[in-house]
Amino acid sequence: MASANKSSKPQSKLDGGNSRRRNSVPVASRAADRASREREAARAKELASKNRSRMDIAGVSVLIAVVLIILFAIAVPLRNYYDGRTELARLNESIASAQQEKERLQTEIERYQDPEYIRQEARRRLGLVAPGEVAYRIVDPRMSQGESLSTDKQAESDQREWYEVLWDSVAEKPQVSVVSGNGPETPPSAAETAPETPAASGDEAEQATPAPTG
Image (cartoon, rainbow, N blue to C red; front, side, top):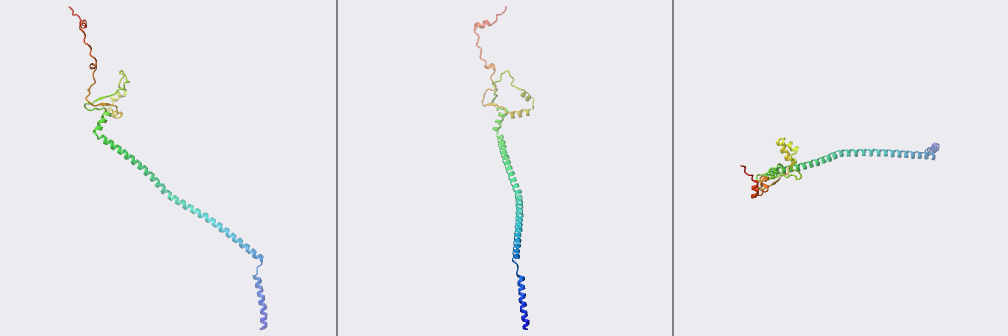
């Protein structure tokens, strides 16, 4: 028994030395392992940075696409809104102008419902006069008496229908001055305005009287 124990002790010592030799690593191999681990770590960092940059580019692209979609979705209603506002302003202006035209026409209708205004327009446009009034037409003094007062246009107007003549008289608006009052209906004739000749004396009468024949 004692010999067996003695023989086992050296064996255990030998086994312990072998295990220490197996676990011990040379310094060169440890440096190589450290360098390889550093290279792997650097490579992993580089890959991570590349992946991060790719993710950043993709994220920015997605963000830009989302912003463009939102802007397009907002731009169409905004454009329709501003177009509607412009059209509404134009319609309001047309309504205001139509309202002004309506008021003007209403005022014109009210004028023509006034008998005094109708008489005034009849005097001014048609040359009509009321009973007891005399109308004087002013002639240009530069016109000579030998010149004809009627033109070809007036001669043609005499051959037209009565409604055409009436329309021309309304459109041309002839200037007629009306004098109210009890004036003479006709201008004095030349016989009335001519001065009286003095009566001949007795001698002149005898000379003027022819002698009777026997």
